[in-house]
Image 1 (cartoon, rainbow, N blue to C red):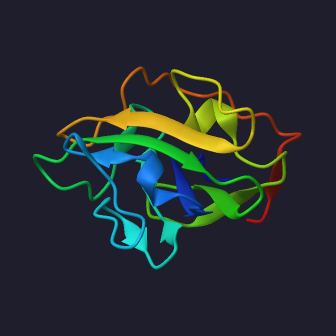
Image 2 (image 1 turned 30 degrees about the vertical axis):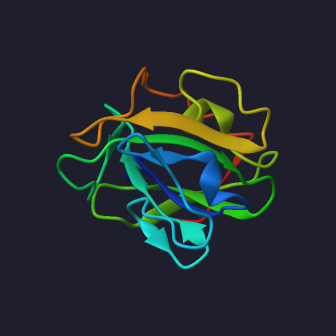
Image 3 (image 1 turned 30 degrees about the horizontal axis):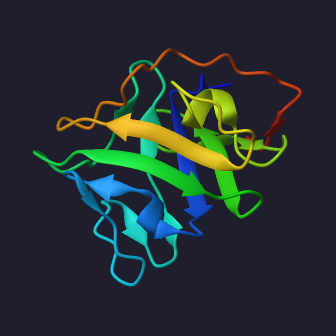
Length: 134
């Protein structure tokens, strides 16, 4: 089996205004956060270093999104093939709240200008919380 290298996120955000982009609070009706797709926030994060792929140069974000059970999360290989699906409780906290406690309800992170998530450490993959789909 291919080793997981990324986490792919499809999180339905309840309150866009709980984030800021380049220091400006988000507008719930017209959020400017990169990687938004409709009502979802869809980043792909490299596990080895916390780099958000496709993050625009010069953009920073302070993310504090309430998601609860309205998100889907996959571990993928380097080329994007989905290997495992999150089957744990709500949000995978160890992956999406690197410097805070999201209590399974939130995605909390700070993303720097180069797309790097602050305070990132490589999360441990607990096989009891991920369902193999490969």
